[in-house]
Length: 201
Image (cartoon, rainbow, N blue to C red):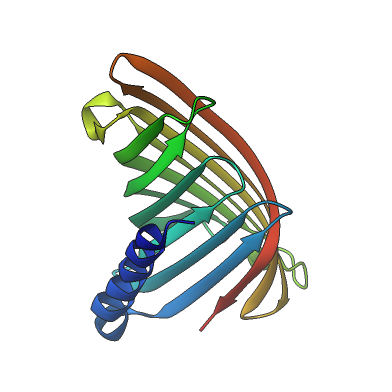
């Protein structure tokens, strides 16, 4: 794994935590997910502003496939149909690199719109500690740079809370990226199924 890339991701996380957590944070969430080939690390800081939850976060995808991506994002979300359904909007910036079958390298740089939804069964059914969360990121060509022509990401997570501040997570992530470099085109598409844990403080 490229040491420069790892250092960049660590700096993103540290910067977000240092800048946001002391002045805003109602809670901080740490995420660690994995499967036989991939590791996903994430951190998020949340605060409540006028009944709206503001979230700042960062995530890195370290995969056995020929790519490595990281992102930083912020979202605003509200309970729409109380007390369980929450919807939100935000922006996500993604950076990374990928290689095709011919070992041609491509650079990812994109800023996308985020749409998210969450249903918290704990608020409706007592002693049913399940939360379902899904989000979609869409970055069209005008919002991309480097070798990137388009970036899409979909996430689905099923969380089971064993205790109030810790959850077991079963997740699915789909990443689709259009690349173009020196008249060469490459479409990256990957489906990741993972298992992991989340801690909230």
